[in-house]
Length: 64
Ligand SMILES: [Cu+2]
Image 1: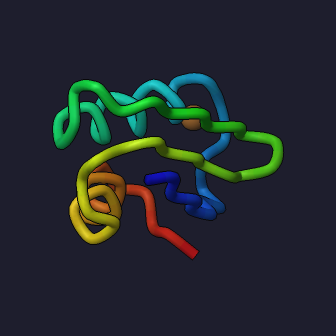
Image 2: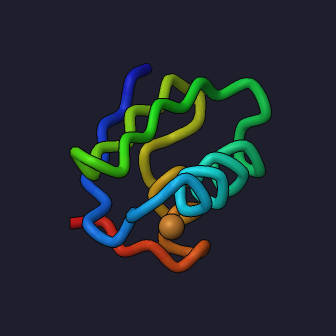
Image 3: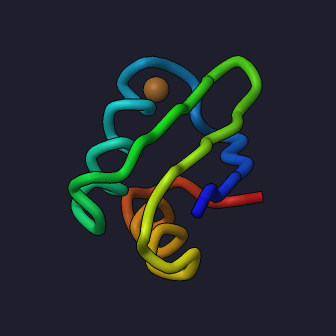
């Protein structure tokens, strides 16, 4: 399924990398599109929304 998150503190490429790695730790095959300009993270995954959310928040990024 396709999930969409708003991550206001995602500011640069390093943030994108951190968030991408965090999501991949939950689902290695996940497709992640993260844009620091729009603060949007789109994730195509078979994992649950709760698991992906927890991974992103666990990496230090609050979800709006
Ligand atoms: Cu950053």
